[in-house]
Length: 296
Ligand code: SF4
Picture 1 (tube, protein in one colour):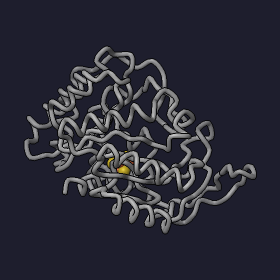
Picture 2 (cartoon, protein in one colour; picture 1 turned 135 degrees about the vertical axis):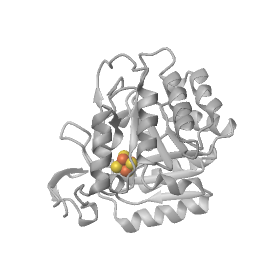
Picture 3 (tube, helix red, strand yellow; picture 1 turned 90 degrees about the horizontal axis):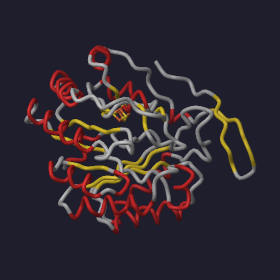
């Protein structure tokens, strides 16, 4: 079963145009036993996943394969990025049992490579890093064979909080740049392009295998995409993901362009030539898509 492309408004330099989503963005509707198992676990433990909160188009595929990306520290974010479907506002109190619940689900699902992300918690002194640490430890305790990718925030540049993550050394640590330098203010209003590069630099200095993701189709030029890739290589990022931005609701930033699969393939070649060890590039690629392949 396929989701038919709904007409989408895109904003080109000439103005608004209504077009059908290209066929390469049509995805399978979620079905199957594994999908139901993941859904039941998420509901039973009142967990949050970025798959749902971020309206990810790959839920059918990933959940169908028994994998999901858990989102910790609640489901309300203190930031209000123009691209992101996660709810913004004042978050609930931290749930100290969350690390155990996430670890239990990872174990029950038999996840071999777990991807964890979080909302931004600029309201907390430790930026949520203690819950991050407890989550990593709980997963390792309950599933010692499971490898981990932590997709972390910038901790508002409070480097002692970043150090807490380095100290528990997840197998991969990701931090997304999300867009090119020129569009950062528009796309990630409270974030800074250079601060994100510094996060990645410090992670690498701490011995981490690093990964970053960029969304395309927000109005960036090809030259800007290449410059962004060069910036990521300048801080020795190992793994790059490039995917098409999709507007989650009409209130979010409009799509400026649909990038073709061929263009994504070209960027992949360029990235590999630049020295990234792995480049996942395609219209439906999301930061955690095929994450298990990035262990190499
Ligand atoms: S790509 Fe990531 S966010 Fe999307 S469904 Fe898969 S695991 Fe979830």
